[in-house]
View 1 (cartoon, rainbow, N blue to C red):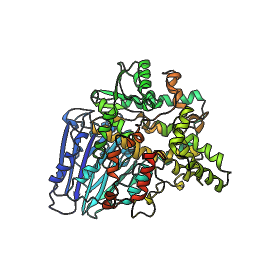
View 2: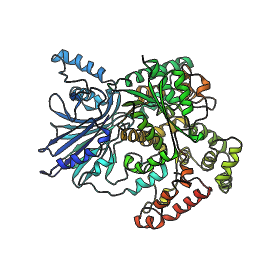
View 3: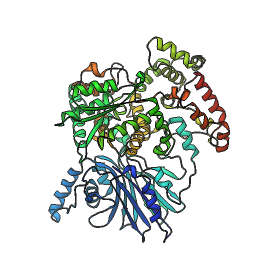
View 4: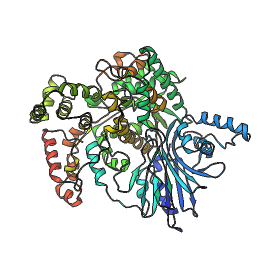
Length: 630
């Protein structure tokens, strides 16, 4: 796991050395073990790299790295879990031709370069199992290739600024280039207010993009443009269509055994490391499954880590401890106070670079900090919900749609408005007496969903923090949409599966994976996600919906795998999520900080937001009428 930066200039004689040194200096957290710079004054290109050594700790893994023939120079961030298998294939072919590849070390960087020379770029990307962001300079063709892994686990930003092409692992890298201009993208700002994150290919800055997951681009310096739109070398939609057109016909027992086999294979490969390794453990289904399959394949007690909170409603540490004791892991937990959590808040803009509203970023940072004190690599259970139907919306959306679709729209609107008249604080207190958790949130979502007129609008209402952000952002008439039913073919019949596709393409890639990458890499910790092994994903899309959601409960098949290792009574409980009580803190210890940010004179001066709806939302939140924590 590493970080990189690069710059190409159309102006001959431009000095790139100062720029590239500044660019990689701001991401030392992504690679504290080593750094390197490569410049080609003739081609006017510079590459920089920061290294977190995980596989092959010797200088043989130093980057930027040249291919054996000298044609390619590469900087790369990530891990290729099957790189030893790729080496064997390359050796077998080379043995017949020229006596084998002359390997200098054991790094996956060297493996990728050899494969690029032997098979070409696209074929190598398709053959690679792992997470990666790659910048590859072709010295022969004088072109730059950027590529990103199938799900976007590793970040990659790029764009043209005043005749200079800049790219790197984080937005802060690009901002260090002298040519960079901080020109805010108001459409992206509106999307962030709606979703809580900025979806690819947008960023908070005009002319700067995120490379979409599963794609590659070629950049030609002479024409000062990207040759074409990003090329898909892997498509989630194609995988989903292929799987749902050829459903895996098997008994429940056979399906569970197949999933367990694929997960074991993925976890076995991801446990390979030349540095200490462990796992995040919340005690939930996803992380517990990963830890259980790690422990069964380890001769020693694996390291597991958990963050706990004093607020019982947000604390899962007690469940993690039960799972750890049952499996026999070497468990480390840290209970953090509200004061410790609040100390993280000022760091968030420095870590995430652009607006990002997922409150679980805070405990993820604290968990990463704790974990890095003991290990360098941690496996995580992220993506289990999106693949196997774990979110409540998959279950509730279809129920609500079927229940309300025959009610006249005028009556549905009246029902929604009626609930809107009741302050949420009263609803919360009343439902709390009945022992109903998250009742306020459920009623709010129900109000929104019953007025929806299509599946797309149901989903949009369920995931939107602010449904009409153009009311907030000055100069935006309509928030851009990345959701379109036209992208989902008739081969994906289930509404639940359609929502899972939307979640993987948007929420997973641009929220969950961003959160995990930035939080962990801020602490120089590498995270690995076994559920995103594309072979696991492919199998998941061959499953019918009733092997994911059954009897009103999600992740049915994943639960059956876990029950082999951990008793049901330890696992089965209501889903909490990894969050902190932001709503209460905004009314308490964070109130002064928040009010300074939304001061009316400041909003007028900055010129991005309309103060009126913001002040109204803030007032409703403070008084308990509405929860406006996002």
